[in-house]
Length: 197
Image (cartoon, rainbow, N blue to C red; front, side, top):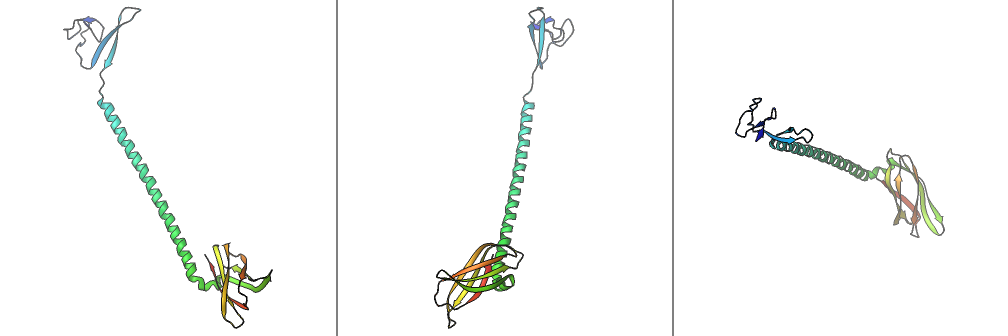
């Protein structure tokens, strides 16, 4: 026994159309499941449409492809930015190295970049020092500076050398250097060079 999906009338199983309303009793997309309401004893009908899983599958596939494309584009963008940043860093280091190399090559012109004054021998507590002042005449701050001094005896023979160094020698500043002398027979000295980078 079946029921008409339009009017709910009871029909025989071999009927194709409802005798009461003429509704189609044969349908491939609708199942009619009668339920009886306990209050009125009249049948309630619930129509269930047969849904195709093809639509859900296509939707999931499309969403997956879109997610993969988005992930790939974000990853590529991050990768390109990282590479550009690394290239810029490498270029900056290369330029800094070139500038330092240029400074080392141009050490012969140290007298144009640094002013050395008040050089003298000073004896303090049984030790001999060479002291003086160096002024940075450049517009550049140096992370390291060094003065090298040759030492000579009374006959003018070179008997040794000494040096002093400084970290962070800023532009326009003055450095009061103090280089210890270990040799006993030193009578004169000569500033060989001031190195800075």
